[in-house]
Length: 133
Image (cartoon, rainbow, N blue to C red; front, side):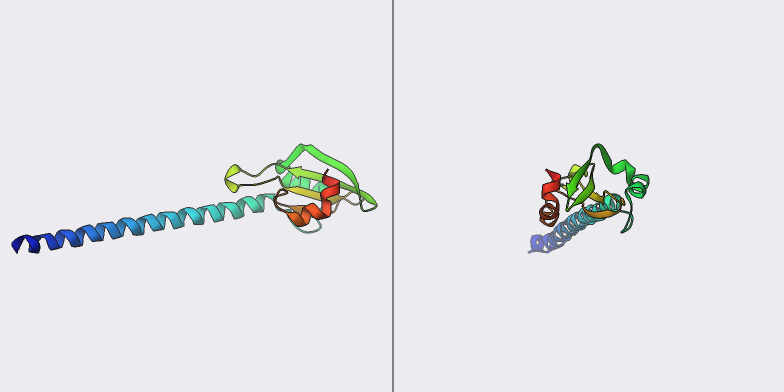
């Protein structure tokens, strides 16, 4: 019996340590998810247009660093012209399936539409698919 009495505090201590390790692991996992969400929101804010009604000139001045200069094109759409600007692909950790794309009215340069991920946005593809080919 004396051995059982001495063994009880050791079991309690080992359970406490195990519980602390589990709680620490859960807190670390939660922290990583939180960092990913915050970083994702920040990345999205970097590629979002500064405001609705932004012109191409304003967009270039404020978000010029995200524009892929080799992928700016003028295309015919809906009886007029549009300027299609492709942004640089988001970092791989964001798991993008395509780059952001911005569509500006060719006549007045005002932003008409945009998508943060051209590979997954079916609405954008159905609206602008013919222009993007």
